[in-house]
Amino acid sequence: MIYGIGVDLVKISRIDQSLARWGDRFLQKVFTPAEAEICVRRPRPASCLALRFAAKEAFSKAAGLGMRNGMYWKDIEVVHNSLGRPSLVLYQKAREIIEQNGITNVFVTLTDEADMGVAVVILEV
Image 1 (cartoon, rainbow, N blue to C red):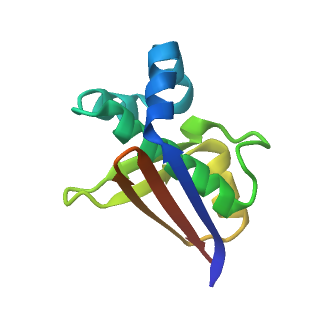
Image 2: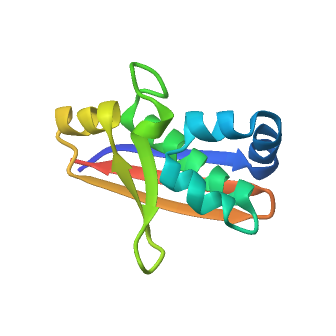
């Protein structure tokens, strides 16, 4: 049964502007060290970061909380398997939410086109 669905759309240029303005402060606040390291090595770092940002927002929407109640950006990490399939690794408050609500599966998909990035997260009990 579906517990929640979250969708987020991010303008990649907005992430690029945040990166230009705040630099490492932005990276350290929003992304895990592994996420930041992967993205800054890419030809288009802002696109990679935007997809991760969208996934974090989509998870918070699917959980029904938004980014509050003690949940932090780095409590949600986007990883990819060897074939490139994305998944979420959850820490701290995000992990607690999953456990408290009996959520058994977390699905995520990411896509980008031109200056937009989209993430969809489905939580299943």
